[in-house]
Image (cartoon, rainbow, N blue to C red; front, side, top):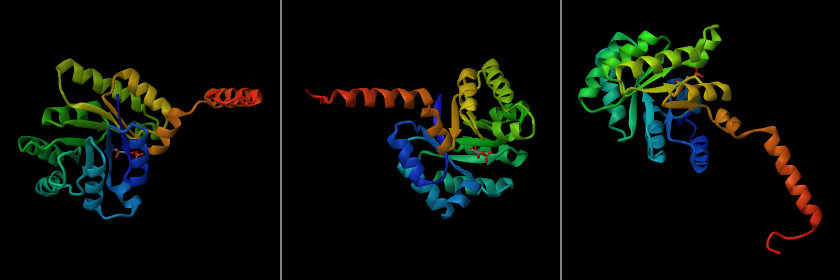
Amino acid sequence: MKFFLDTAEIKEIEAGLEWGMVDGVTTNPSLIAKAGKPYLPTVQAIAKLVPGPVSGEVLATEYEEILSQGRRLAGLAENVIVKVPLTPDGLRAVATLKKEGTRTNVTLCFSAMQALLAAKAGAAYISPFVGRLDDIAEDGMELIDQVVTIYRNYGFDTEVLVASVRHPIHMVQAAMLGADVATIPFKVLEQLYKHPLTDAGLDRFTSDWKKTGMQFDQ
Ligand code: E4P
């Protein structure tokens, strides 16, 4: 499973890259607004930093404008993936962008049939939002299960990108279901490394060794 960072914060991306765990990045208008930086230059800066796919989202909702913003985003760098909302205009734009050689990430997916429509339109990635479904007492991971099965049944090459990830259990479930990608906040990436027994074990090894008074290279 590929790990994308779900952020527009350059410092978080740099840290994740140093750890060698970042295969790509996803952004959205809320994340870029939170970072407080100008839109296109931020997507471009991230794309320069990351040697993998970087999703930049269109702000438009009408077909022609989605296309025009999508083309501008795609022109920023070769690794920019155009993120498009799951609407009739959005999916129409996905098909057109695909013909032009531009890869898209269809966002705001909340049902299996929406995911099937996105695959039929030719999306490179589908982003089902698991956390937001959990928030309204639906089972976000059940949607991932459905989408993975449906895509496998028909041999679609659209990648299932688990979005709106809130905690490590989502990551375990996504990996067990065979999702292609999960995009995660930096905080969740940090949590994946953590286990109290790792910390306790490290403390014990360190203090036992200190008691001997010996050096590593003695
Ligand atoms: C990423 O592509 C999505 O925009 C993001 O994961 C949404 O996450 P949220 O539901 O925590 O805002």
